[in-house]
Length: 569
Image 1: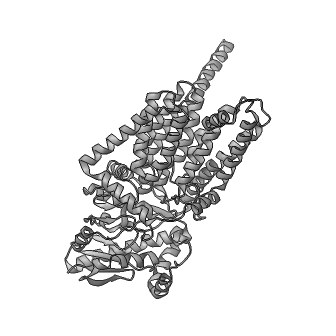
Image 2: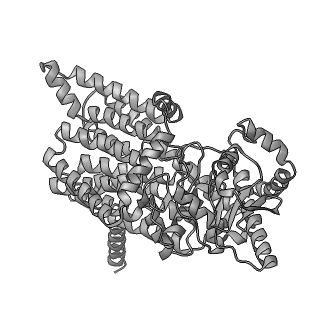
């Protein structure tokens, strides 16, 4: 009897273990777990560790408010990238009103990218569940948290910048996965059309890199010309419908041309910079290319040079070279990204080719495959773990008047330093103004320093308190604000009307076009133009000079130690 019960217990345990293993290797399980993780992150009022360039996240918040007010990107405000990311973040902001802004921005593109990846995974899973998992899990890892693969500041925290670059990297990952693993022509056509449309509407340089990949797929026979033409026609048709209904596309293209005129410069130095910053991937991939080229030349047999070159172009070796170039081109335009993760599906294809080969180069190829892929995953996991494990020891930065954007935490030393630095900036504005006139910042990487981002939040808090005090004393509610700085926080936090026809995310060196007549007219109707002073910087001085015409006829009010307000009479 006891033996029977023992056998039944073993059988039950075996079934349970088998069921658990089946669950763990199911792509559906991982998709569901990831969605639960994202929903929990959006529903909970989390406080997250502050990271470098956090004010980039506030640009999405500014755009979301403008969209809620009825403004249209590129038509009603100049944006540094395409409209899709802003609309998706605005939608998530509406659905999840307690979500942390950095998570909204990081996960903004998931409503587009995740379903497209799920389609690829389901299609591949019909042939091989292992391959489907190998495509799915890296995407989920890199999409999970606001972490870039290049560190700008040594203290742990979540990266507040590079959101749209990460969006593009994830879309390019899905595109490469589709080009290599989708066997249905119709499905591939639909996926390419959807991805190219999304890429164009998020950031045009991503669409340019994707066009290189799709064009190469046509040239090498991986995608039929007819299918590519159908995909292109679908994209153009949808863009035409959007243009007819809104005028958005023409305005977006005009913004792209303006950005091109503001961002001139040689490409070669940028390629070298990317190769230097991401040598762990670029160097390993170039070495892998060399080994694969040697193997292809060794095995050419009696093939003519032309036939060998054609076969090489269509092989994973040719694809690796083209993909590396296309992705490097995209990264030349970026600061903060998930660099080169779109190589992973291609590296998987190379792994599948070589894992069963009896070739003396096989160990070399496998080692180089690991060298080209593992460092990115390790960097992401290590930086994420540092931010998460360090967060319990951090303390809240008390800037409660800023709402959700202020739900951040910092090291105790930063929390003590930031208000002291704000006072220091206020007392020593002359010294920092002198630096600004010479084109220098207080430190070389000032904007990436976490203590500066904390001081910037405290400066904004001081501005809101001063505005409320002024309005109470003068019994006048100001109708809106324009801040002569990278981003404005006042309109959203004080529920006022943001001006139209001005840029969001003002970078005087990259994204600050000439002032249009419409912008001046709208600014003249605005009650308050705000000038921050703690500290004076080159960028703030350039922005102030750029909008000097809008300040004419206004009264300067010394609102607080760190803020001047230019008041409409």
